[in-house]
Length: 502
Image 1 (tube, rainbow, N blue to C red):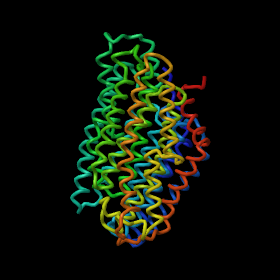
Image 2 (tube, rainbow, N blue to C red):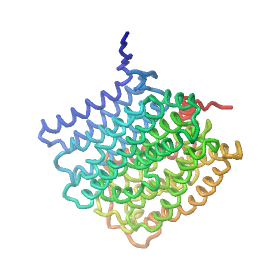
Image 3 (tube, rainbow, N blue to C red):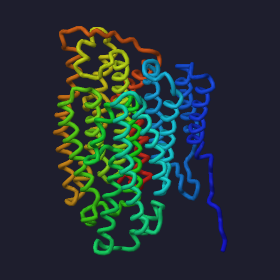
Image 4 (cartoon, rainbow, N blue to C red):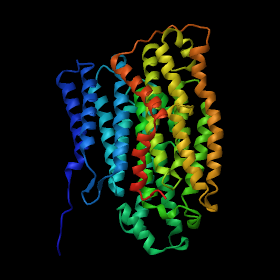
């Protein structure tokens, strides 16, 4: 019997390995310097992300470790999002370091980098177990970060809720993975798809087990995405966690969940999408989740008085729009999802950054505290307004193009056959709930610009803070007016999954 070791190709892992080692060095530097360098540690973390981005740009495509690690256009695209969201989260936390975190600054930054490493490994995983490990490496540092203010009751509560629900969802997902392995005899995603297709098994043969596996895995990934009914943790965790961590959760963790969903459902279970596979069909199940997300997120957000809770419910609604593109199984579907997530990073990270700066100065996250901010801090008020309008999908900002892309992909799919006419309902509810979203996105704008009171807060931005806001503004304006480069980049995702232009 010949035993052959798999090809390693460790050079494909250089971005992940570098960032992991850099995070360890940051902790070491903070301890060796006796935690006296308040800003140096943060600048080192930002430098590490920039260097890692440069390494990523020269890392090629290919597979290693027996196809367990696979660099493709989707992995590269989402790694850019992970590094960008980590950069903006760290840069927006400098005020937090000065106000609330005197010790353990190195650990705070390193945990964000460790979570980013997990996201990057996840995006390159092409096998169920390595994908699960990447998802756990992503989530475990976030448990600690959510409860980083150990003397703050809300922060501790946020960390505990996130940990308990996260552990439960991980168990669900692992249980579902075991069913898929039992049905297919492999953990390799591509081989799993082939094995399930070759057997020609009917619902009578595997329907109950497969449906249970789909439900369990969707529950595990639904937690990462905050997709109803797995969304209950979101507003409480966003409110209690440090604001930069909440921002990182809303973008990085959500993008990681989208990658995991695409790899398992679209790559591994593509054959079980569509009316002909009912009741195994997962498309309608995800469609129901998207409808619930858009309705619950947008309606409940209207009643919020805390801006972090409002943005939490907003993120639930946003994942509903994203999943419209995900169930559009054509060449436009994954392209629209990638573009949506890319532009969402600029708008949401920018909005949370402004909230973080305002909270550092005022100590308040109440929307009413923003009254008259345009008179004392016009740049900050204008920036927050543009970020919120982009999230609402107002042209010519990037959020409008993103929503248009997912709706266009869905309509294209809905018109491809009678079996997919139910997708018209998704689009209709998406358009209707977008109108509801204007109510709560415009409320802070009204407080800042149309209040007769003058704000008692005049906020001047540090260099890192100004950089984060400027990056966000450039992103939502530039890619709203000129989206073609990112759409072309994102179109490679669909091609790598086999959805080629007709």
